[in-house]
Image (cartoon, rainbow, N blue to C red; front, top):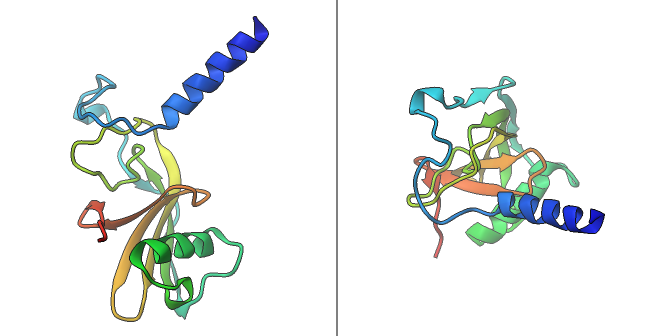
Length: 142
């Protein structure tokens, strides 16, 4: 019985982490009842051209977006960093037609530059979920 309950709990937790692929408001909350995005700390500008320190969330994120953008992580410089509370699982960067878990996700708003372009990056607190965001939507790369 105990193993069954643990297995069921694990299944529920795994299911909550998956991103459903249909649209709509599953919470039943009206738009006025949703939690707004709030900044929990003042953005801290990095020194122009700062390399993220190895082993930090910023370095992990630089590695991930470097791969996505087909850049080397050492080409990316951290421009600014701010702690954010994202209103849902989209991390403030919604892809049309996708439903997201409706809970506040603590995370970071990071800005990187490769010297020619600047990239806005939304992430959860530990950098395990990363979205390069452009005009409020995930950046798609070919």
